[in-house]
Image 1 (cartoon, rainbow, N blue to C red):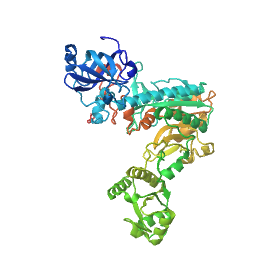
Image 2: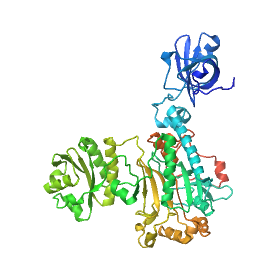
Image 3: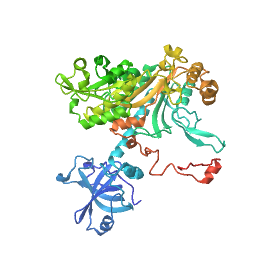
Image 4: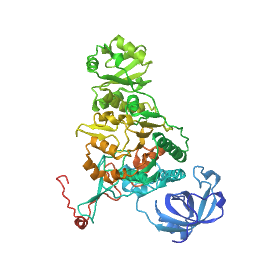
Length: 590
């Protein structure tokens, strides 16, 4: 190193005019004006403009060989920029540094893409050269935002008496829900650890241990199919408390979210958040994580179609099916091709078709309008308060299935008409989830969330005889249509825990084999307890206004769970496999 850095590239201002400074960073921009070369030097903290007199022989040679992203060190004097060249959009915009000495610390190869805010490179190229992508200002700001948020989380929970306790990363395999990532044991041939899908069992045991307020910024691994908001590994704010009820967890999480969004976005959240039951969310929005920044709520309109001459609907109604739909104000402006696309989507989801009716004065128009009859037409206009230019979209079928289809169409309509206020953060709780759901393919009951959730007291009697009636103290935190957190009040009694597992096909022997350490702990004075685990990655995605979770993680995986930068996963040395007593057998697909 030719000298020590005296300042970062983002902190110089007019107070330093006349001072000799030493800066180090990357060449972000080069401009040659003949005799003078202007160089923007960048580091994590900002950008400073340098002026190099290329008539100076000692400066001309190193400056003449520079290219983008070379790493340089300079010594120079801070001076004011000319008034017509000052920039208010950067912290150092009032000054420039006249270079007296320039040293090239490292050269850069020709870049695979330009380091710019609005990058043109595709995502795969950016992920392959992630170390270059992270130099871009938008990426840097997201990583810094994540740091500020995680620091605020720790400070907030510490102030409420929570202890940060680490739980193991090598755990017992207890397959349930997503697939485990397995780690072979060298010292125990034929045995495997699993990487934790969550610290669920350990945090419950911490409650039995008397640590009544626990948290951890926990790394969790799940071998599941990926989407824009999922990764094979993620970070969650894992929290658990003893002697609490649902409302206590809600208040804790609302306070934490208020702190996070104050720090991360400078907004004040209105608390308490609204609460919808699972059934109400499905009925009104067709989805258990509704985006409430716009309306278009679903309605049951079966009665309006009574005595219709439209055979498709009358046949469905005779079988006890329903007609449900939603009104799109001024929806007549939606292009026919978009409506056709929505109908194709509805059919792909299992609908027989999509009823599309536009209100024109006191009449309805659309492909099925002529089959309705005047009485049905009048009832629809009056009961739905349709105005000229409104659009009704409806589906006929089994009520729950129809609601799910309409829930997806509602989101499409919201996007087409740009109904969403992107400046808002709409939080709500969804609770009273069913404890079980029926897996038709496997012909078994499975947990809708997980099997450690406390059933409602009045529903325990239905466990063995009508499991689908059982609601549990399960709750999700939703913001702008994205599930940010999931949690529950836990079962703290062994007998009840074994009954809940038995309904899902886990008998006592299997339960003891897989979960014996937790079941045993529940027999030694386990307190009532509950918790929640907000996902940091999704929170930052919402705060930053991103569409993909990959944009807020330093080193994410692709949708195929691979890392393009370091080419993980990769084959390993045969000697390592032999040491672990593992033999690889590939099928014809490799």
